[in-house]
Length: 143
Image (cartoon, rainbow, N blue to C red; front, side):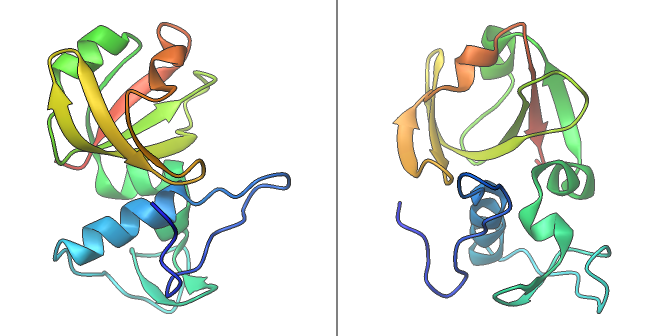
């Protein structure tokens, strides 16, 4: 799960990398989703080069808003039952209405999701996502 050197690593946080949405955007592009390119970073969804990309390419909440969200809940159990392999998922850790993190559901088995993500680079079963159960809010992004 090492970062792709072509796209670099986004460092939008002061103390740690925040590469999750850059990683999700790369998955979409590699999967054949066409970019919506503008010369304004606040429009569309695009990447032209390191440091030359739209806000929606790198910001979790803007990505969720641009791509759309078909389902949200505060319950991890309910969330898992409403997502499937290939879904992009988001979490609002503070339940303040702004998605803080994006991941990709690589596979699903029963009540567990195998999630690929960056920031803490991994492909893991559930990871730390259930930690926000009934505290944060989960989003199914773009299906």
